Image (cartoon, rainbow, N blue to C red; front, top):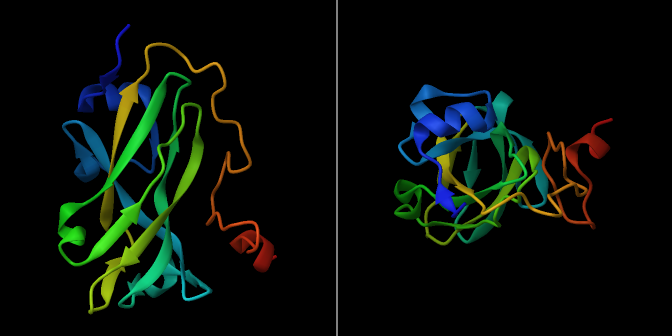
Length: 165
């Protein structure tokens, strides 16, 4: 079987996305939305309660997706920042989502502009496309972040769950 990008009708059947939004479904992908947590200037923010997150100029941020994504062992995800946000000065650095992944995603953004950029809770900000591999991965993802529901910070930082127990 050759590799292929999954169309909208296959996404519905084969990829677990929750909560699922019809508005986010695209012909060859799904628009992930801003979730309940962000990390800006060394602080973990409650995006859901505040209604959004502001990324100051020349500032790096981590943003959690609203959606949980669960991939089968023969499908990977490739993410791109929505072009409207790129035109505002945001740059996204995203790894591929490995086959077998299950959880919410922590995404890295940088505001390269001279103006603050605001992301509202639930706003569509990154599109993910799903690519079927030629066969199941021999070693699908089963790493430390499997089942993530909160921001995944580096080893030198604590996750929200650790900070707010």
